[in-house]
Image 1: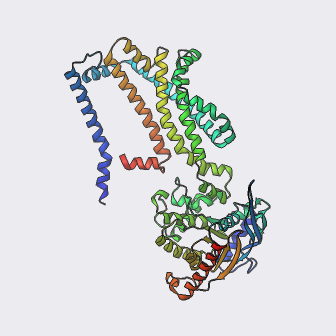
Image 2: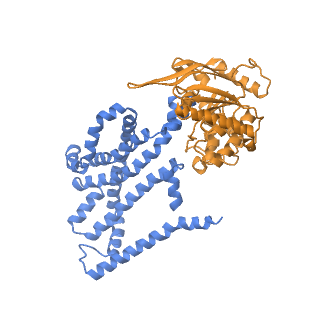
Image 3: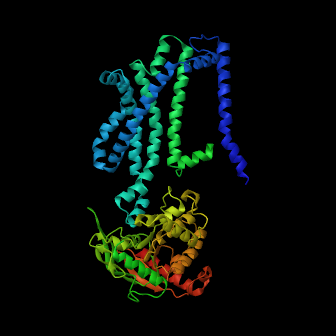
Length: 268
Length: 286
């Protein structure tokens, strides 16, 4: 059992290396600020950012903003998930529909969707709705495209097996098509959740008086660089959390899939 | 389950105890004037023409031919995946095809093994083996019991909870064979099942298949392009010639079973293989 201890140390590796990298980054940051003598208003020293982060986290208002951004993101993401999977399955299953809609889909893909954000603010107001819509729109495409790809990628040989076993349509769906498409949907979800957060934040930048994106713009107007850094860190933490939630869902739903067990081999 | 298939199952069980209750000596599989044509806008190909063949209960029939001779087409018609243009296919006297419509109650008594194992990676070995039983509606306890028995039969005891990705190519094909056997098929159809395996694994799988087919008294139609394999396993070897696919000759192989791998070094075995190879070479020139 030569490999066991090596496997274990491999599993532990990221837990050791990540803190070390973080500490090194902070030291480099600190040294840079000291040596270059750069203004606090441009790059604040890490200690100041950390103490600001503690202050920010201690404020009830921050948590309200964070909650709003999170719910906008999740709301948009869930809409994108439902609509994206349905659209992906339909387009994957009905070739003539996909063929006739392809130009429209490609065109809407190519349009920089962030450019549409002001329009959405005009249409859906400064409240939470416009951000949910923007989130959903950004997250929709990767989920739909991946689902479509998944529906088309069902292995012909496995289909043949189901046919030779006299499987009904429902059985073929339950035992083959659904299971085989799931990894694609989850890959789309991993991209989608990140885009949903971006959508919510960009929406908050441009309109409204709520959410961490709004908070970020306010710190910018106050020229409070350390608060800006702190808010950004908080936003990244929320993003990380949501991403890991989707990733955990993936590990739970498709433990048999290459993307999961290969990942396990790499980092436990 | 329809009364028909219930009767069929008991008939299989009867045959298993070698006290056949049904029509004794009735052919397991009968092909009468079977032909297949493919029509496209540009071409009209006759893939198979006038195939007549009768296979008895418990017989192992190898079908060989060059690529393009229609052997896979033939198997797909036998498996209920492709309808014949002409002729009739009878499984225990019952017609498999009604025009282009397949009789599902007949198909459900067939076991098919393809060149690729085509396992479902999301199911364990036992679940893969039991899939046909699950689709049929057997309860979990009985289908798992059967899956474990079959895993033992095909030499995979201890791997029941493994997943396909953890298995080698040969092991995966064993799972596919076990899956095909799970429903006690009247007929086991195999389309170059070991074509993707290396020579050594292939030789071992040939021995295993012989053992399994003898243990289950299965009737097997085995398609291959490997002459050695065809002669080693077959009670009879059917040679198909291409363009259009026809039966050129049928050789009866008399070596008693079980055959050891050494049978291949016997002069008579070599003579049969040589004959068939010459005949196949003739196909190339035509």
